[in-house]
Length: 225
Image 1 (cartoon, rainbow, N blue to C red):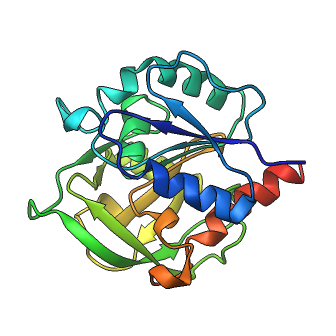
Image 2: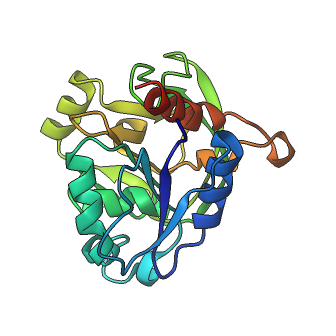
């Protein structure tokens, strides 16, 4: 069965092509490209991806305006049906603003844009997105963000930890995120948001392939379902 994916583009997205290339490279099937103004998504999708960038110029708050785009109503509906949804960097910000994930992404500690490869620790290897990793393993994934400082109240943080919904954690100081959180899952486990860019780590020529396992995990899980 062919893997059916979609990549959403907002005004200001700049990593949508990166995601599309990564998905086609790994799955062998080009994803459908969806514009933010589209009111509907293709039927029977296996995967929806929200890319990094600066949607709507990051006006108001990063991801706030994109969360109100027509397409996001369809994304929320599909997520509620169990379709895997992945938001990376600005996509993570959009997911929190759309209330598909708890918490918020604030300005980095130190007020600096961070652009480098960082070390992550895999905290949960049992999710749909992470079965290709081992818990506790360190991987190296690029980051490029100015508003990646994850914040949530203590009760929410404790719930995320207790329910195994912290997927990735920074293994080194990066942006001031509470409890070094780099990526989280929703309660159902079918929505993942993370600030680092695994789509930029699928080709050895780009410096590493530690991001491949994330996409391979989803593709294997959905095709075998």
